[in-house]
Length: 222
Image: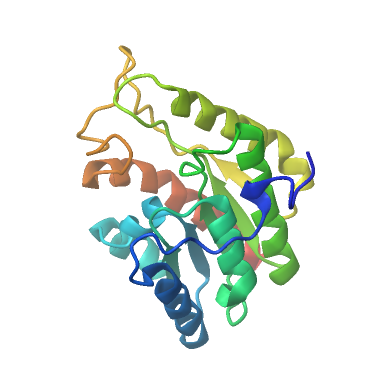
């Protein structure tokens, strides 16, 4: 399958205003405005897992010192991030690293479509920010018990890793520390609703992200 019209996950699309308050587009405009005033070295972009990270102390501990910006919007799918980045969010900044975490909300798309959507985002980033490195974070397992979305997310991660040679400037990081226990369950102590991370869950996930970012930034100096 080729990217674009045949794959909704790889077709830039503004998110529908399901709540009727214009919130998504307002956030997008705020991000574009923020980008005109900031000079981030690291940009996080994605869905609610990115957005909520900003509310925890670990953001201020690990990522604020790296001059990081957070462009996460809850509910975003790959096509929504693609639209946002195509429409101004990358136009006024020049980050060294863009951290991409999106895809778990693409419920209506196949794993292949989601992986292509992630790939389309990486290629768009490269066209707009050719010197930036892209760090793709693996999709996490979800749901208290084994389910089809867990299987799909794992397949997306596999496909993205297989596609890395064709994704310029991109690398992949599996950030799942082992949230699924031996009996197949996920604890609410790690994911309070079996999708979004708790403080403890973020603490576990963010350490390897921070370590990888430091390594990439160090390479940038060479």
